[in-house]
Length: 417
Image (cartoon, rainbow, N blue to C red; front, side):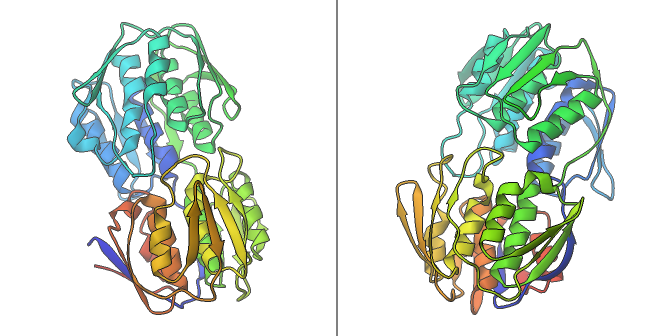
């Protein structure tokens, strides 16, 4: 079941509930390593990457149960194996998040260099430099990062560039380090804040999360706790675009509206009528063709790179010309060739996609190249005339919970095979 077929031309209308955030739950699961006793993680999305992280922790020796709601109860008190093997983590870049907590609690780690989507270089050197500054001895050979330390020491860590997973790795490790750690040029993404919320519930002393300077006062011990994962802002944005690209309307409950200002602004610019409550968002396109919007990706709170491909699809049928500038990943326009197969008029110049909107797209066989690219092809298929078959759909299962089921509830016609 590695492809989906979309019969285009159906208008998206209805109400759904947002799932838990993939980019929040993975570091939280890794962070369970630093807490003694059980943690209960709720609002966990059913995703391939979550399954992989669970398998990794179980292989290390964690006691782990998943209930019928997909909530996870986990105890990491007896991890007799501090190895994250290539065979388990080769498809998941978030595996690097096991490095910091393993060294912090168990004094050693062997973590495979991560794999994942082919969207450009995302080096792990900043993770390594940060842990080395805290006293870890690290050697990289045979495709693995080998790390050891009696106890990490707090230090001032200046990130050479903003990195979400790098910030998260050092943040988790610092909670058990001796003394104070300062992370400068830290990522301010909401998922980092959600991780800090979980760690603080475990007893960690953290201030400054959500800013570029995070202070952590290390503790001797932390303890398992309960945490509900934040809503997935990228899933929310993707489903809003699904309604916009088909001229429809949608209400999404359990929304995190404060984290979506940049996306909301561009949807309004595209002609959508957008209304919000404390925990929901409603978009109504009123049957209109979208207007073109220029996009420039940048770290939060600017426009997220994880929404770039979806807006590329939206602009492909917009009434006019636009351009999208990708500043974070050099290979993140691989969906453009596939969109052009469907009749889009998109030209790449360096790190910019120059788009001339067309009145209609035509269904065609296309192939996904990464997680968000696969979402853009599904969105294009919703708006296209005829059938679109998206191959290599396993990418989308890494980041979207039952996407075809949710879209079919909203009026689409999608079959997985």
